[in-house]
Length: 204
Ligand SMILES: N[C@@H](CCC(=O)N[C@@H](CS)C(=O)NCC(=O)O)C(=O)O
Image 1 (cartoon, rainbow, N blue to C red):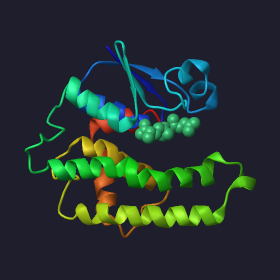
Image 2: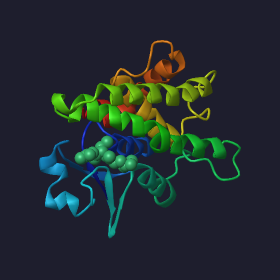
Image 3: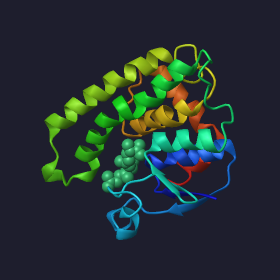
């Protein structure tokens, strides 16, 4: 059976959300988002940097949320959540799927470091301000793309489990401004999904 190594309120929620959307059976290793769990020898043996998510599938162990999601879709169940290569939605599906870790998460990581993780005396307001501006800029194309659409490529796909989750996290950090009305209603639409509630909201 699939086993997800998970901590609440972080990227691991994307994979749990996908597993719930697909109705797959899984076992959950729920850790605290704390060095005592993530930097333990046991978890570092799974992930060299002591990070989550990590997925076990029998003898196979895989990390990186995007890679795990693609692995599940390809090896276990697709559920119509990944358009095939000849589908007209495929290029944009790939684009938004990878825009998440490639463009949106780097400034968000910096914001988390300089608002939550570092002790107050080591936080840098200049670095924080730059990251907040960069995150706002990376959200603008998403706001424009969502005009007239419920989800990133029209129907709900696994790109939403990546980038939609990043939008949700950005909003929790106060980085989605009130003018970004398409992203605000998109987040609400995601939050109304039972699988999202179970995987992302309830474990927080
Ligand atoms: N690009 C990786 C990022 C993994 C990552 O940084 N995960 C965070 C949780 S959102 C983590 O485990 N942080 C713990 C730490 O930095 O010590 C992915 O998408 O899986």
